[in-house]
Length: 517
Image (cartoon, rainbow, N blue to C red; front, side, top):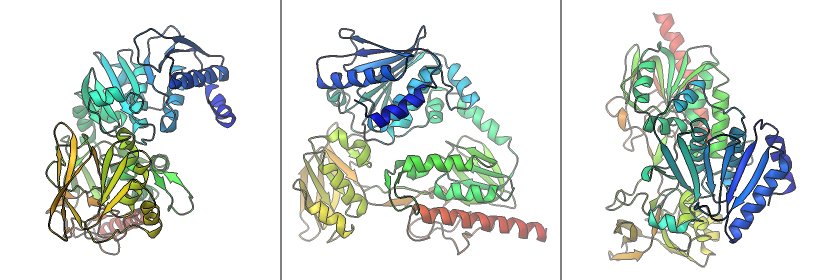
């Protein structure tokens, strides 16, 4: 099942296991069960601390397997083969069940250990989803620490009957005790905040007591991380407050234009950014949404949890989000056929008919990827021609199961309990037409995350923060960088440079105002 190179690497990891691991496999006569059998036998051969037993009539999903510590009560189960992006989830689960200390803060571990009640989590994933592993790994960790918590990872492509029955059309989708709990990427802190009702209040009290920052960065994407690093290197008090560290880069799969790095993936780049930030004395306050900013000699950054942070200078690096079509039916069927990540959710539409809205690079790339999974793709572009690079268009038009419609304005998403079609207007004839399909992937660009700044700093007609050549906004002491600003070309490498520039400008502002004072 595993090649020699992977076995060598895995054997080195498994040397960190200190306690015996018992794997119990639930199998049937299918091909996937035989593959799972091969995988588990390979694992047992790589460590004398791993034993594998097989069961055929235990009532569990088949194929699946559980991990337990000898004499323990750990509720970690994988329904399906945890390969692809989930292979790391398997390795971490083996290490944690085998006694290797988890990489989590002591207070977080204590919070998990003290959770009361019974929590039965089920997470539906696809092996091509780069957002799913973080959810799987967080819930596995919780199940290892607290015996009242159980977690099962379920490969949606393998258990299609459950996917249809539960109407799952986006991954990751999490159920808790049989009820829908959440959808999309969730960090450990987010999950804990949802089930530990007192967590938000405790976090607010802790943040409200913090001293004023010299530089407070709002946003934890490439621009925010760069700004924080440059500020901290000056030896001044620096903080980051972010709704999600990494921002939209966490949702990006292949990155091939980050200079000096031939290829990387969004989550890997974010992990490197976070590691770099932690090399300095930066106070990172993750999973916190900013509600408002009150400018002044000492700016006040108000959070939705009720806390308020003080700062001498503020750098806004709030990034952008997927642009929505804003047509009837889009919000109603989000997660029920309307999706924004073809890599994550594409496998759930295997053999079905889908549409991609948007003819830029992201839209054409999505259509190409989906064409290898679904039965047919219809790409709709508002303009009279596609805007994607020529090499991508050539590939797209070579695919037999793709139809391209230009001058097509999407006007409605239709459905009953889930998407069943799309209505568009032919912009040449004016005629309204309908397409029968099961999925719609929206790829029409980005919107800046600046709604909370209206009336505070100057915004362009597109909602971008207006900045000068030094990253200064219309408010003294408030700077901005990255995709939320008027700086053209929204690219990771440009955002990093702009973050560094805004930080240097903030430091210069601090020096000048202190001299004037």
